[in-house]
Image 1: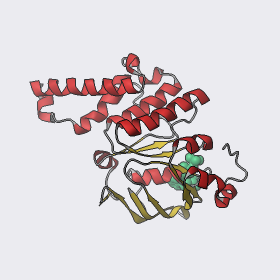
Image 2: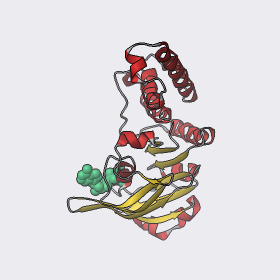
Image 3: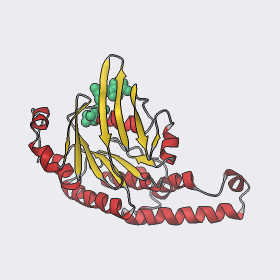
Image 4: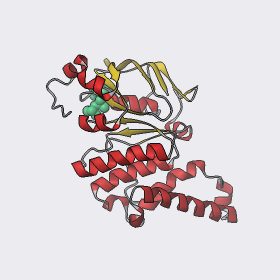
Amino acid sequence: MEINNVGISFGGLRAVSNCNIAIKPGELVGLIGPNGAGKTTVFNMLTGVYLPTEGDIIFEGKSVVGLKPYHITARGIARTFQNIRLFKDLTVLDNVKIPYHIHAKHGVFSSVFRLPRHFRGEEEITQKAMECLEVFGLADKKQELSKNLPYGQQRRLEIARALAAQPRLLLLDEPAAGMNPHETRDLMELIRWIRDQFHLTILLIEHDMSLVMGVCERIYVLDYGKVIAEGTPDEIKRNPKVIQAYLGEEVRV
Ligand SMILES: Nc1ncnc2c1ncn2[C@@H]1O[C@H](COP(=O)(O)OP(=O)(O)OP(=O)(O)O)[C@@H](O)[C@H]1O
């Protein structure tokens, strides 16, 4: 994935400018920066929520700029949100089944007329969704309404649902927000594991510096909408520009 000279303005505000980020297949990369630096805006441009004012975003050799979020998901990019956005009144299982339909082979025709192909397709989707829930330790919660899960499990379910869209690039917006240190550590191990297991590329936004440093192989730092540094966790920790950008914020490294 390549973000080439991307920028966006909201009225007079340059939220992101001249942003260049390149991620190779299989990398686990962090995107960090102080509050309001433009991290979520970058995710919103990658997923078609916002249209960049300039620049291009190339995924697997083709531009995704101008595509609708649904089409971008179908092209292989899935995300989670800073504020959990589950289908609250659906069960845990249904939350994970829905994205599998993007790739379902049984079409609308066989579903409307309840043809055998529809039932075979549904069975296959249920099985895949259950396997996905197993990975996230949520299989025994399959019939619960997602809104009734404890917070940490809702966060895991959101990642499970993103994974169910069978992406090749997974974007995680503060996946550990609100989790306790124990849950956070487990989640980070899980993120590494799913990257390896499902051959994913992952870009994640995270506020907890120790966490980003521990899990990511490479990090980009945004400040006032600009990439001010890129490097390994060690390089980033020592980078004077990064230290300067974080002055006044609590930095846990
Ligand atoms: N739809 C919008 N309309 C106007 N301004 C916006 C919009 N979306 C984002 N912004 C502004 O763009 C800037 C970057 O916001 P963004 O949410 O991307 O930052 P962030 O780095 O993700 O911050 P945080 O760490 O606090 O989540 C902020 O000044 C924000 O107020």
